[in-house]
Amino acid sequence: MSLALSLPQPRVLPMSATLALTACEFRIAFRNRWLAIAVGLMGMFALVLSAAGSGPTGSLGVDRLSVTVASLTSLSVYLVPLMALLMSFDAVAGEVERGTLPLLLTYPVARAQVLLAKAFAHLAILTLALVAGFGAAGVLAALLDPEAARGLPALLRLIVTSVALGATFLGAGYAISARSRRPSGAAGLAIGLWLVAVVLYDLGLLAAVVADNGGVFTMKVFPALLLANPADAFRLYNLAASQATSVAAGVSAAAGAVPPWVSLASVLAWPVLAFGAALLSFRKVVP
Amino acid sequence: MTLKLRNLNKRYGPALALDGVGFTVGAGERVALLGHNGAGKSTLMKIVLGLIPFDGGEVQVLGAAPGARREGVAYLPENVAFHPSLTGEEQVATFLSLRRENPRGARDLLARVGLRDAARRRIGTYSKGMRQRVGLAQALIGHPRLLILDEPTSGLDPVSRRDFYRLLDGLAAEGASVLLSSHALTEVEARTDRIVILSGGKLVAEGTMEALRHAAGLPVALQITPAPGQGDAVAAALPGHHRAGERIILTCPPFEKLPLLAQVAALGPKVADVDLVPPSLEDIYSHFSRRDGQ
Image (cartoon, rainbow over all chains, first blue to last red; front, side, top):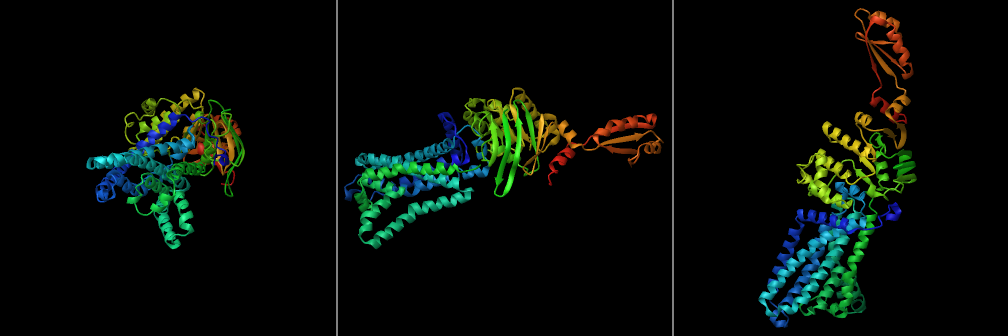
């Protein structure tokens, strides 16, 4: 950390420097086609899911948009962390490998500003992709079902919490990037983190719940473990808040057991924790 | 003093990268840091910039700890690199904003280093020399009081080198201090005020080129061309010579130079011409950088 290296940080953090770096990072991400890839992926999946999700509508007495939101929640859980990690794994390790980091750090900017600028730029791209993709799904639902307006709050909640989920995995990606010596190593770790946090964690919980067969683990530990994983907390919140649990199998029991504000608190606390971890890791980087 | 180093130590594991190095750089002074690859030049520069910690001694940059007065210090790294997706203008504009300067000045700055036409092209398409010039442009931003330049002229053609040193003269005249490392000894001699030689992490010599030449005490050579038919007569009058074809060559320590010249002059018409060959910069540099067992 900065104390260990005796590298004093400037006292003031003027916004203009952070903004200039953000603009620069956004330009780089844009030229690397990240905006096009993110918007394209999100839009394509969102439209396919909302078109395919037309089946259960009438029978469940739920409006079409609420059903779509339930499908989009599952999409977000996989896609948003993946895109966030893919955008962020190169952030520090790439600068180290290109040799651009030492010069940047001799400028009168704090490391927190450098990292914030990257986060703002990447988050802007992620937000644009989410608004475009999920917005398109909302428009499609509204066109097909006059009752779809009832699902609008759920869609907005989904977009906001997806941005928070993205911020969490961006922070995790920066932390990984700062701790890896090379971008290739960071890429491997990022994919590993995605697999563990988004896929294997749930599989493990599922196995434990099945083995426990409705015992203490399922009642007490399982909800806490869901809250401890940002992706599960995200799913829990969106399903509980929209009361769409009836159309989403899996975490329904737990979603009923945990009040929405608790899962929301977890979703919103994770970006702060992840960015804190990223900053601690970045401060240890010796250029 | 713009820069003050005293008894500076830096270890990498068991190896001492810098061993008790101390020197100063005053306002408006241009100091060249010379040494083999691995002598500790880049390490020293990174410590001065606050990029890496040091293990012992004292470092003062603009009167404060390294890294504390970053607004007054400019840096040009060895093999400077930029993101290939940015244009030269965008990169320099960003750096201008980071130093609280107007980003619109990027084009003028690039024009100063001869990149006016390439300003809107991506840096990924630049040659090494062009990237080096973007590096110089960013080092000129604002009014840095100390410039740390690591091999600033590597990759530059002779004309660009001359332009670069002209820029440097202007900065020094305005009171900026310059610490630069280089392998090009001849340009360093003409364009810097003082030389510091590092070898194996130790400071082995420091001073003006004249002072170093004097301290080295390396032999001076006299090349004497005898008048036609006088070769043997001249040789007989000058013991300790050796002959190279028609010419007679004498070497002597610097302090015997004038008596020897008088001796040659006394031969009068027997001598057609005399050339004085001082030790080359390379000789002097090798003398100091090898003294500690390299």
